Length: 123
Image 1: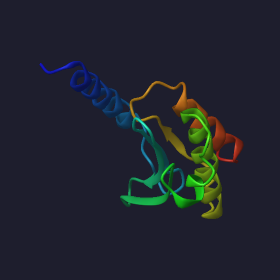
Image 2: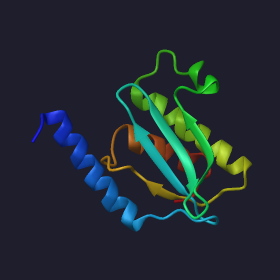
Image 3: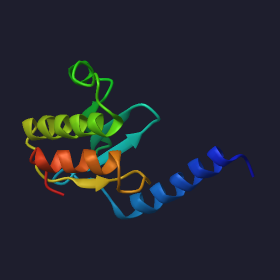
Image 4: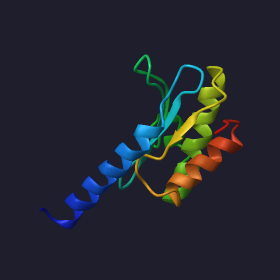
C-alpha cells in the first residue's frame, strides 16, 4: 500500500477530487485554487471553462519574496492572500469560488483565505 506520506497524499487527492466535483470556476466566478508545499504556498485564480489561469501569486514571487523575511508560514500565506486579492481586483475579478485543494480549512489555508477576503475578494 505504500508508506504514510504516500497514503496521506493519496487521501488529499481523493479529498481534492471531492471538492472539485462541487467547485467549478466560470468567467464570472473563477476558482481560487490553493496549493501548499512544505515551505511555500501558491494561489491561482482559474477560469475552468476556458482552462486559463487569470492571476497567480506565491511565496516565490519577487514581490512577496522581499517581504517574507522573518515571517512564519501562516504570515507568508497572509501575504500571498493579500497579493492574490490585489491582482484579482486589478483584473476586475471580485467574486471567486474557494478551492481549498483537499487541505483542511485551518492554518495556512485559512490565513490565505481570510487575507484574500480582507483584500476585497468575495467568497
